[in-house]
Length: 74
Image (cartoon, rainbow, N blue to C red; front, side, top):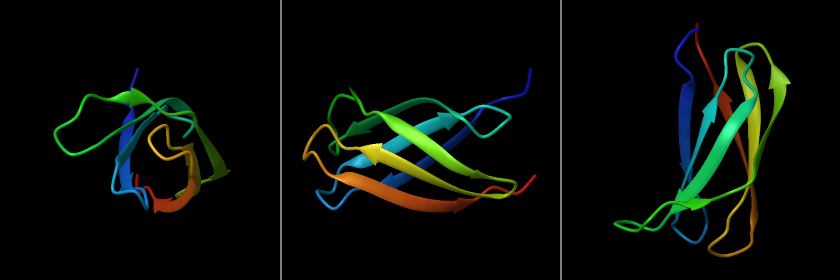
């Protein structure tokens, strides 16, 4: 089994959003945390295929739905 991809972005509320993706680029788990804070579960979903995907999180700290695009090489 290969190592999962780990991606991150920042929400508009400044929380750090993170997710682990499997080899098929599906979200295994998502979480958010304020700087220096404890991670909280953040529902996340990936959309797309190939090297370019979009990941959507629901931030548990502010309630926003945050969509970000990523290019995953390799």
